[in-house]
Image (cartoon, rainbow, N blue to C red):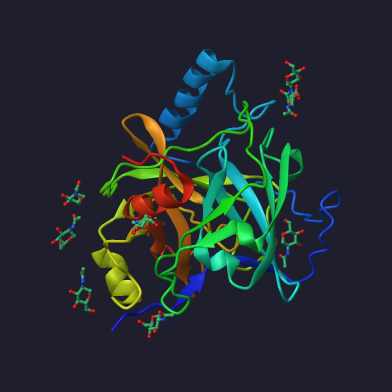
Length: 294
Ligand SMILES: *[C@@H]1O[C@H](CO)[C@@H](O)[C@H](O)[C@H]1NC(C)=O
Ligand SMILES: *[C@@H]1O[C@H](CO)[C@@H](O)[C@H](O)[C@H]1NC(C)=O
Ligand SMILES: *[C@@H]1O[C@H](CO)[C@@H](O)[C@H](O)[C@H]1NC(C)=O
Ligand SMILES: *[C@@H]1O[C@H](CO)[C@@H](O)[C@H](O)[C@H]1NC(C)=O
Ligand SMILES: *[C@@H]1O[C@H](CO)[C@@H](O)[C@H](O)[C@H]1NC(C)=O
Ligand SMILES: *[C@@H]1O[C@H](CO)[C@@H](O)[C@H](O)[C@H]1NC(C)=O
Ligand SMILES: *[C@@H]1O[C@H](CO)[C@@H](O)[C@H](O)[C@H]1NC(C)=O
Ligand SMILES: *[C@@H]1O[C@H](CO)[C@@H](O)[C@H](O)[C@H]1NC(C)=O
């Protein structure tokens, strides 16, 4: 028997006003996170890249995570979900399937010029016909929790707007740590979303831990990553669904996973979380987007 209930990591914005010039998310607090693991390597890699392509210098007129997108999903009921996504080509971003149940349209914010919510430089608004949820997505088991969104027109990459590389087939990233980021809530007891893009570092662990926690009806080692949230002392939480787990593969930051679900007990107890394993969906992604997958 498994011990934990599952909870999706999206955030319902019941009182959202839909006025994008007028965000009213008041939280000014920045969590003092102490990233470990590969943070140095990541920052160095962006610095290095900066020297080559004229300046990925974090936080001033640049973007630490230029593939990150913030998504407000308007449902047919006019309730909004807040999710995240990642740009994978000029035409497509990738996110979690569960973010788009009964969606009517999606507002996409990207190209953050620094870590502030208001600093986005790219905006797009697409109807649900631009959303491709995986045909085998199952809202009961949250399996195949992956979706693609086609931009309304090709985007033009710049310093603050870039794509993230897809993984190689069969990459499982076992024991690797990487970066995950979002504007989601930062406490179980305070459901205020952040207006600062925050990031943390998490580690992929053996799926038997998630199998034990969530049960084999929910967790599949073949198509999901089991994520340890203890080592980074922080985790993804509501509002972070669909965000990427970026891990270095051949020295390039790579889209290893997509934030899917955590435990009903909350985000702060160190329970493992489950992310969609992107390397298991490369054929589907390639088919739908025309991206050459390896
Ligand atoms: C939640 O956090 C915000 C920002 O720090 C603060 O203003 C608010 O009072 C907090 N709410 C609760 C219930 O603690
Ligand atoms: C950002 O860079 C500009 C131009 O180099 C500089 O004038 C400004 O002080 C910098 N701002 C911060 C917050 O570092
Ligand atoms: C980002 O901010 C920098 C420095 O403030 C500014 O020079 C640049 O034009 C901004 N980029 C965009 C795309 O708005
Ligand atoms: C979703 O999974 C459950 C449990 O395996 C199954 O009973 C149900 O038929 C599935 N739903 C769809 C739409 O496939
Ligand atoms: C992952 O780490 C565990 C525990 O340290 C170790 O037993 C296992 O061999 C490692 N697996 C891989 C694929 O690195
Ligand atoms: C996970 O752990 C189990 C049991 O210890 C082991 O049989 C299996 O090979 C491990 N899987 C990976 C991918 O390391
Ligand atoms: C998952 O747990 C079940 C028991 O709940 C067990 O039968 C199954 O072998 C486990 N699968 C893996 C991949 O560990
Ligand atoms: C890719 O698309 C072709 C043509 O629609 C289809 O026959 C094939 O099954 C698809 N493959 C995958 C993995 O989705």
